[in-house]
Image (cartoon, rainbow, N blue to C red; front, side, top):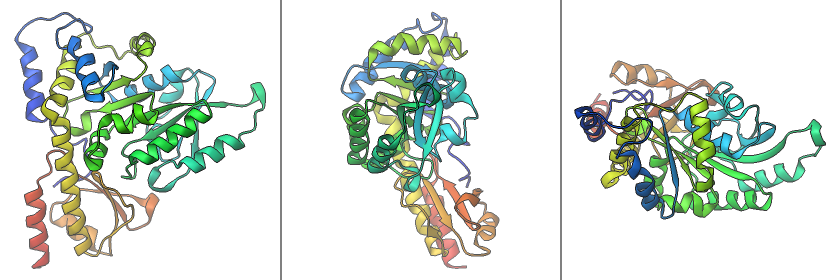
Length: 341
């Protein structure tokens, strides 16, 4: 059982079928196809308001093109120091935005807190042209340490952003897992809470390679499309991205996949606790960060489990990530086997 990442999984059957269906003939290029034309309407229904949808093939492109629509080249982006845009995307943010600077701060479970954010923004010293003015706040849902912002937490951050006239961006690589965990409307934790743009993740949750930039201000579409083209992320065979997204949200496939991942994480957490593990982060999505007793990690690996050491949380800390195809029955069977030695 591979719990190294939700990136190791195959394409789920429904999305593969949608890709295969696009192989039956020709279609207009660069988003002129029939499926691409359906995305705005479909996602507007999903989010309960008019949105602009800009498909791209990678999470880095989704995050950084989104930010480039919200931030000037000389502006700042407040984020958690554990944020993916800060720790795992090299200098992509600066590259895509033309120079915007990340301004990392702290918070529990890689989550920003409204009070801390407010204090940070209030205490900034304006040195005119010599300093960087924060123009945007970036949050990740769910976070890099498995935390999930609830509706009130996101709304409070949105209120701070409005108070200080800052844009709010959400990295939603695992947005589906957060919505499934909260059992809420996608609207409640995005635009209704003050989010201006969202990268809506698909690749980690069953897609081949697709993320959707969701703009809640549709006037930003042209700017985002120009940035996508300039950065080399406009695919000529655009229909293959559109087909993935259309299948992903049809009949709530995205939530079905995320619910399986979340349930698998709950079952795996029980197994790890029974083996003496201690959860280091209280999360409700599909990432577990666990401290394991001496020898336990080796024993689990001998049983076929694949997972990463996570030394930033301690010498005996490990990360386990479940996914849309994690076999819950297999986890339960392993739990029984370990219980009986």
